[in-house]
Image 1 (cartoon, helix red, strand yellow):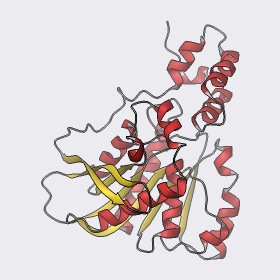
Image 2: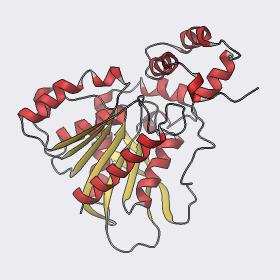
Image 3: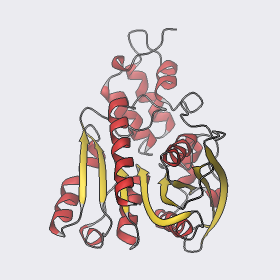
Length: 295
């Protein structure tokens, strides 16, 4: 069977996957609707194989990378899920205290891709903490379908408390200098926005295609924001004009970038929604922003 190329896939397939990934349709309906695009030599199974995440082959920074000290830790989230597990990573052999970054996963727990992103942040000179909001349910189950199902069982405001507790854990960590930012993707983008609302000591927030706070919540933001949006992400983008208006009204510090031709999830290099140029630019902007704001 010939390998599928991205330009063979209609935009409707990416939109359909977005509906599936965000629980607007179940797996049965996803497969059923996907069959309409199984034409011209494409099969449903080949489309499924192409569009689903490939974690095994896409890890950029392995957990065993000798440039880093990476470990699994546990911290307390008394207002959230209780005991939360997370990946703590920082450059190996560093004796000076480092600025911290909380890395927030999507709507399926701490999967291998987000753990990889946490290690990428550490390679840039930060101490990163990548929590798993599925910890109270046993942790990321090893696949995204079950991960999404598990995450729906948790209250999102309680999960927000888990990530606020991660900020507090980093703040008190002996290897952290107390200057902390947050970056999150999709669900994690909403968490990043809300941590900017809720955490007075947060120094920087970087939501990737994340849901927006209300105007009243926006009024409480103190942290500078770097916001990344995908042009084809109509679902998230429809809330941006009102959010931007509130940011301007209350004179908040923000920079927003819209990435032309990119889909929701464009930073995730394990799926074909990945846009290499947009992802690399957004990540370099993110690291530069953290280096500026967390210094």
